Structures are given as C-alpha cells and as structure tokens.
Length: 128
Image 1: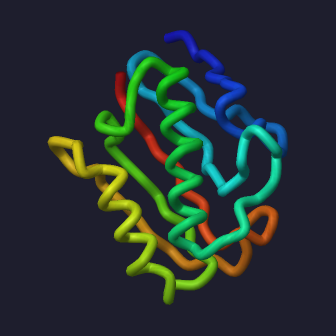
Image 2: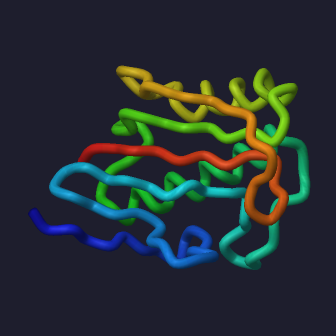
Image 3: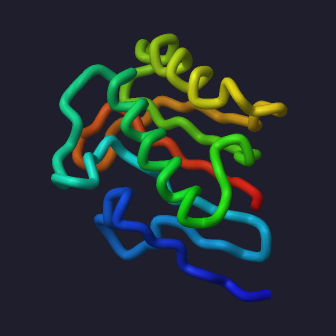
C-alpha cells in the first residue's frame, strides 16, 4: 500500500522531522497541530480555548489537502498543558465536531510541556 505525504501551506509547516499528515490508503494520520498561525508563523497568544480553535483551523486545512474533512475524523487526541482547561477546550472540541454523524473516539491528557510552550495540541486520524 502506498504511503503519501500530505502538505499544505494553509497550515503551519512542520517544526521538526515529520509530515503534517500521512495518507495510507483511505486513512489520514495527522500530526499534532499547535496554535501556530500559518500566515505569520506566530503562536496564537490566547486562552487554551482560543488556542484550540486555531489548532482546529490548522487540522481542517490539512484534512482538506488530504481530500477529507473534520466530519471524517475517527480518532482524536487532545494534549493539555493544564487539565483545568479541559472544560473550555472541550466546548471548542464539541463545536468543531458538531456536524459529525459519529463523534470520534478521543483521549485527552495533561502533559508536562508542549512544543513552543503552547497550552494545547490536537492530533487526529481520519478517513477519506
């Protein structure tokens, strides 16, 4: 089965040796997105909820490049710098998936530190 790199300039460039996403057949494995504004390369300086909104904008851009969309996400992982931000981030998460027929399976974990010292990172797996 062919493995294909997915890349778009409508989402932040990878900040390390990885792809924005990888397609294997109809499966799309998206790397974690942090709240980088693609046009400027700057980190969105805001609350965890505001940062989560930017993460989802970036995820949607990568999924569009892969030929799919947020309603086709089957698994999501949310990494939080502080679990106290779970409720506001969860509200953003719910809004992001409001048009999904089936909500994705999900994990949400608190981590000691995230890249660029952001408050949230989100990764997804989707199907075409």
